Amino acid sequence: MRVSLAVHKRQNQAREQGKAEKDDRNDLNRFFVAAFYQNINQKDTIQTGHNKGEKTERPAMKNVCVVDAEHGVYKDGTEVNERKDNRGNENKGEVLLTIMSSLAQEESRSISENCTWGQRKRFADGKVTVPFKRFLGYDRGEDGNLVINPEQAKVVKRIYGMFLKGMTPHGIAKTLTDEGVPTPAGKRQWGQTTIKSILSNEKYKGDALLQKTFCEDFLTKKMRTNQGEVPQYYVENNHEAIIDPETFEMVQRELTKRTKGKNRHSGVHLLSGRIKCGDCGGWYGSKVWHSPEKCKRTVWQCNRKYKNEVRCTTPYLDEASVKERFTTAVNQLLAGRDAAIAAYELGMAKTLDTTELETQQQELLSEMEVLNGMIQQMIRQNATVAQDQTEYNQRFDSLSQKFKEAETKKDAVAQQISDIRDRRGTMEDFLRILKQHDGEVTAFSEKLWCGLLDYATAYADGRLTFTFKNGSTFEG
Image 1 (cartoon, rainbow, N blue to C red):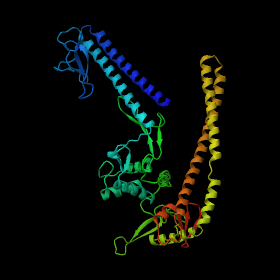
Image 2: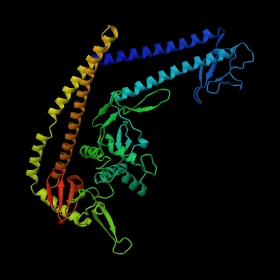
Image 3: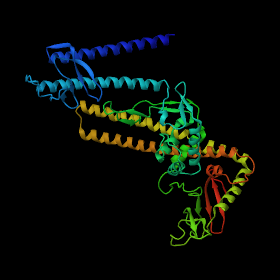
Image 4: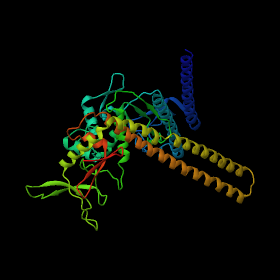
């Protein structure tokens, strides 16, 4: 009960303070106008049009017409500095416009602050809202929260499924566009940016991150991505999920993994970027043989087969044989499934533990805080007390160097922690899929191919080995 009374008291104080600030602004308005024009008629008003279609009534001098602050003319078309009474109002009109503009800007700032406070209060209370007309998969419920739209949810699940099968955001966007599936905004053309946004939006797993962006300037209304400038709030289990959390995290790791460079992911085909050449280490790619003839066929061979000085001797492969031999290798992996799962879980606990590294990272952060405090104290002391500048510069350079070294070590440790967490996540995904399959696999499974396989290696003698994400290798 005391908590409720305290909240009620703070609310009353806030209302009284807001009322007092409003009264002060009104008094300030009257003061400026009265100080400039001695003859004031409270019944007459001046209307300023700072925004199109917006008119604000304020006290003004007798017989003053409507002023359009944007175009600088009176209602009758006369310019501001061309009054017929010729009482030297040229400068007065400009000053009046300046005063009114300042008051209007202050009022706009006050309104913006009130709106911002309201939004941030909603965020702090965990109230979630989204642009439902442009948000795929959810509708607004009776309580204002997110409710699943069954038809749109199928599209979301399909997007996640296609991505985990190896397709790129560009390929997914092209597929949906060709099929005529409408975008979240109801348009026909999908873009890879929209696909990436759907794949990385935590709301699809039932959570909500609030205040991702904020208004930088109340005049320009420019929005910026929140990089820590204002608080963010994460609401867990806020609504029903379309994508289960495990699948969502798997997608996030796959998004991070698919980077540009030598290891750039190719989503052209299910086999793209998955078969290595045993001679040169290059990747296999699809090639079409006898394309203009009836016996046209697609095969897979080393992309560097004819580009290296020494020609690769690895054979070509066809898709059907690769899938069949992969199924054989998966059954060998599943043969000792229970023992393998126990061994993998024990190995993860020992080799993928980040406790020591996290402790080391915290120690480096504490060291950096101490060094930064010493540097700041030395700067303040040098600004108030006369010192030998040569000695000061030497001490400053020494502390700055120690700070940089600690920062470099901290970044290296943070990278190690990130790499270990990525490997741990990959192993957890591998074990989860492995636990779901008990018994012999009789047909090729895209889910097993994408979830278990790391890569395959083709050798000149015809062998094809499959290396799985846990590091084990089996010949197919």
